[in-house]
Image (cartoon, rainbow, N blue to C red; front, side, top):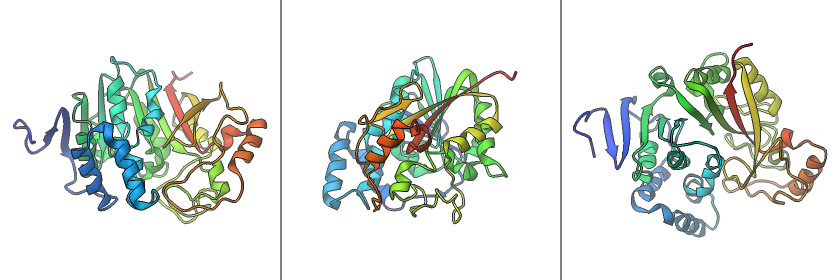
Length: 325
């Protein structure tokens, strides 16, 4: 339904407002036909049936490749675990950069006073809006982050969940990852926090034989992305160096297992796992993989030697800007 007030730039789906003021007129990226299926599910299926839909698609495909994987990835309620534990309150506002199909938007809206989403894809924004149409505290700004950024206000939380690795596409320039953090920090309220969830470039699963999450080839990240452009993940020291260059931040690292996409448990530097605390096998739903060694046994060895923070499959990093000394 198009609102009568600003019919050319604003659309209302349930209680969700979509703003197209910065939309370039066509989606510049897409996962193809599967997005039509995702939109149909968002329109027709109640939230409490998403798990049944996921199981059905998995049975149809005999695994979670092809159509099954995107449905699992975008509609699994496990995705929300990455933020649902955070102390966000109804007095606080959230900026979600790269909200996609809304996998965590609803969880943020449940906790916060208001959630402002920035998303380049109009179709994905529609999927987000339809699945969260029962909310009245979500605004989706459709367009390129660089075009929208200067119009944004300030927020208590800014999330970059599965987004920071694409900063080159968002920001451009010689050091886009540093600049992305600097830009985000300008939109923090005093005491506000930036939340980053990203794969570890040297995560254990890549040594064991999983393909790089974004490129889909073996060892591409471990070798430093010699054949790739437009996406980068980081080791813990590499990410710390980017943060150091970006500004004066208090930094906390967390370790989601098996990764930030489907986090069943989240460890911290204050509470690291003991041998036997984590899963023996880490499933890989989206692509085939090899299994060059037992991840569980190697993980137990890493934990015993205090090396989990270096080889965790993913990082969840929370930054709080501190005053310059």
